[in-house]
Amino acid sequence: MALLSLGLLLAPRASPAREPAALAASPPPRAFSLREAITYAEKRNPDLVAARARVQAAQAAARVPWAQWLPSVGATAQVIGSTVNNSTATILSNPRVDLPRIGATRISAEPDFTPYASTLVAVGLRQEIFDFGRIAAQAAAVDAQAELERQRAEGAKLDVALEVTEAYWAVRAAKSVAQAADEAAARASTHRDAARAGVDAGLRTPVDLARAEAEVARFEVAKVRAQGSLAAAQAVFAAVVGVPDAALDAGGEAGEDEALGSLDELLERARDGGAEIQEAKARVDLAKAETRAAAAQMRPDVFLTAAISGRAGGAPPSNGSTVGGHGFAPLVPNWDVGVVLSVPLYDPVLAARRDALREVEDVRAAELQATRAAQEAAVRQAYLGLVAARQALVALERAATAARVNHEQAEARFKAGLGTMLDLVDAETLRVEAEVERAVGGFAVARARAALRRAVAEVR
Image 1 (cartoon, rainbow, N blue to C red):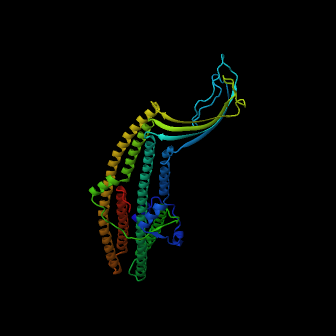
Image 2: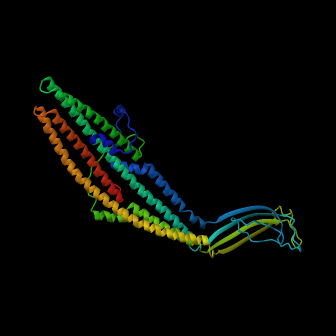
Image 3: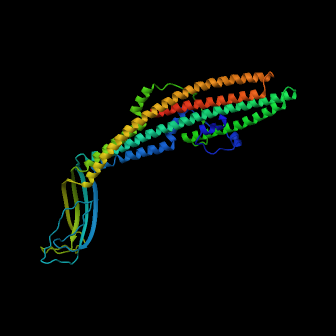
């Protein structure tokens, strides 16, 4: 029967079931309303905590390009042994200190392969003066990446709200099923007692009593399973919300079935504010920004450079003057200040990267169009699903009412001696199944409504 399999429907991600005795002995869990659960989950849900951390990391990365406007300071210290034909001091280039060529020239008629020592100690500074928009393009690219992470976080927030909403209504539906099972078990016990009294009075046959005993056992099993499904649904609810408790109950407001708008209105809202569409737009913006940043790397650059150095070469210069220390002591001081214009005339790697990123722009634009179509289909599907679920719930309400009236009539006929235990059992089964189906139908409406809210990016 439907009552026995409801746990799989309402709590598909439930943890392993506990013993019924442990369930009965455990204290009742605390209860959250749906609004309280969503608010709590927005602060504590692990997925959202991770999403916010990614947004903060992207925002921190967005500050990196602007640091290129700050002065950079570097230093170098070198000790070199080499030949010094046409030079008396040898230094290695390095990216930290800009050093002009300074030093006497050693001229000899024949090459000299005798090694001489050279030393260098220098501190240099470089300051950006004008970058022709290169840094701004880089900053725009990382800003676009931060915006993409923010849109992803918004989508994760909507996903968590959907999960919490589904888990909340699953608990409420499981509670309704558990209540129906409790009431059915109580009625079965009453019918068994009535059948036993009838058998003792000679008004009923032992078959009626045996059938009544079987029905009591069947509904007791259903009651235990319904309690297990409720406990599993409460455990899932607690995990989704992010509370440290082992279980969380659904309390607060009663069910709602407010209209969310016409299909055309919902489609328009999804086109403007759908989370998937906003994320796809952010991807398009990021691709464009990265293309501009790659192209900007080929622009000129103007910067100020300055350095203070001490150096010495061990080889005697042509003028015959020497410096003490044989080149091992950087005793010759110098300083320099300059303005440098650097022009990358052509870099095939940068050009290829720029062209590749332009192709990525086309891909992201095509993905945006596909996302729009998928989002519109999702809204239509969710809307029609909600309409169907509401219509089914109306029919299930009528069926539950009719089943309850039928059961009351069968019970009255049984008490009057006009009906059999088989008729009463059939009426009881029909009533319980109708009440369970009504609870499942209410859950289906709530889940379809939550899916529609998610599709149009509306948080409860």
